[in-house]
Length: 336
Image: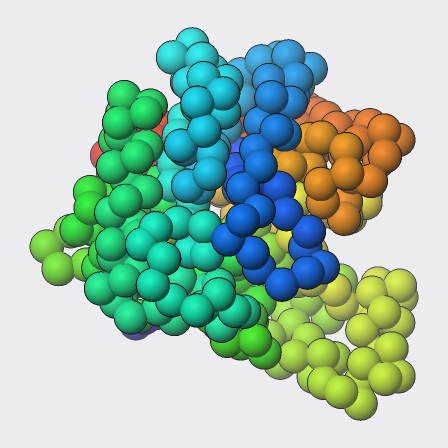
């Protein structure tokens, strides 16, 4: 997934309506401002997940993929909530790896090791194997979609997930680098899905929809990194570029984003021929007080309203349709 020279575009047929996917990082609650902690494993917010189905997803026929991590996959109440949705055909279950809370616990807990791709390959594989077994046992179905916690893929991640039977990865965040604290660098990636070979297997990458918008969008790959330099940040040039409509990077998420910006992102990409869009968020954001984005009831209502506006615009203005990840994989696999 990290070797661009081996990527092959994954395209829908000409004239196919644009497709919106929903991928949820389905995880334990923890304080994002504090160091990672193996003991932070509460999953009470999973009980809040059905509400967004009742309010939004069911109306549009949206079948999200809940990529669950170890605490969620091994907590009976959380499994029961999500399994009920899955068995009703209202969601799919994928895998999400937070290495600090997933056995075996052999590594030091720190920021560098929070990116599972930085672990020794054998340890990363054994954690992934444990995750896969737990999900298969507790949900009754083997997962085929993987999304790395903190987007932390490494040089051996693709081989490991292919060996475990996965067919889809959703870890790439285009135009974004996490290398400042040891994470991967996706700045050369764009928003388009692609196939990549792993041995005799072929996996599908469905990136998190992230792109440059603004008058200088075409120059984004060269200009945006310059706006992130220390001098540019001290002068707040990035903020100036965004406010003036020159250039900004937008991710398709209701977390910390204005609905108007998300609409602009979708319109920009649709106009550029993008066929597949991926809306993402974290499961704890559906309950008050667990993420920086939803601190009170008013913030939760804004979050849900943003999701509604995104889905409405996509369906009514862009003529889009909604698909599960497995359905899209099947549709793309049918293409030569």
